[in-house]
Image (cartoon, rainbow over all chains, first blue to last red):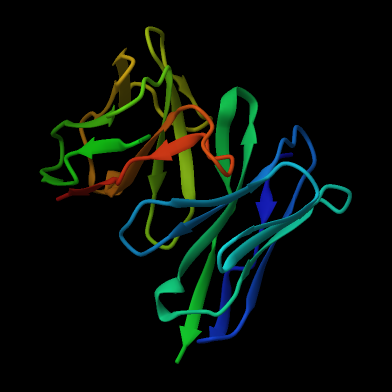
Length: 109
Length: 118
């Protein structure tokens, strides 16, 4: 299979750090992407990991471990505007993107 | 660069009518575009892959006669929801395949079209 699993909801406090995990099935795996989607909006690309390790982009970082079929998105110095849904995603044949079910991030003041 | 637009941004129609949604790549050419549907509080579900100059490839469970896709040029794909019913009310999002950008992004999403069928 090619499905992805991620928690449905995560709650964190403003200013804190939160990690959103994603596990995937290894069949035909090329790399893991992360997207942010605010209510009513389209998904916004955050990061892509094809190789093991950590990719850092400002307050957001993404990690991949191919041996564990696992990745995560790390959000630091949380701001209220980070309240959104976060999707891990993967490419499959013909460059299609399959999305996980999404993690709703709630941030408390 | 790599901007994708959709039109209309929202549409309300009566049950039984057909609705056409356009997806355009504004500053690049896209041989492949993708159409997604998203119901409230759910994930994006891929409906079909639209290839310029050829027939679209539909995902399992998506009715090709109901969701007509035409990719007439390298910058335009259209999705027509035929004989729309209330259960077709959803958020429709397209994306276009482009050159890899810094960070690994290769698919660029449009802003989405919200369809409400009464």
